[in-house]
Image (cartoon, rainbow, N blue to C red):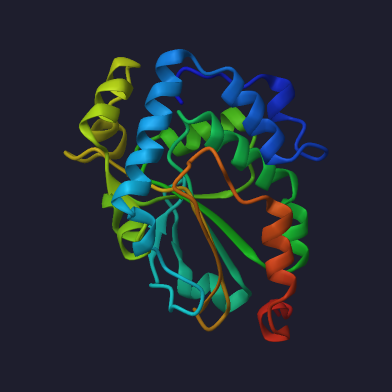
Length: 235
């Protein structure tokens, strides 16, 4: 939630702490208004069954071409030609739970590299926001801007922010339409997909409770279970 700040200790301790432990500490710091908004949105997402539209294991993942934090274009088809592809959607740099997840992924990036897996993280934030976040959190991740929410739509994880949640976030000083370069307030459900070199989804973690994220160690376990072709050298 916007009102929660993450301490340096929380942000730098992901080699020994699980995301669930960090989540519990962040939840404990929610104000009453933030907690009410959090509970409302999670309940709304479950009632509207948004997550049921997401890609599932066995589906073919739509390919995409998106700019990174420095304006360079990245093709999912090219990335999965080098090895398995991990696509992780996050809401934005304003969300402490997203920042915790990004730091946890960063902490184990060398292990993703050792498996010849390309890890990309996507958010709808545009302009200089991804680059600012990359500098702020000292990230060496491939951060892509999901321009016009196209990839979130194709992966089935996008939703229109309900009016009650919009009012809460606006009261915190956040204007998602401006941050996203869009006229609409839209967000992705944070989700992680493991995609093999044939473009088939082999792992899908989609959780309407946006405070719950897949542990990087579990993503690595899914990668290790892929057929040998998906973990071959990039030569």
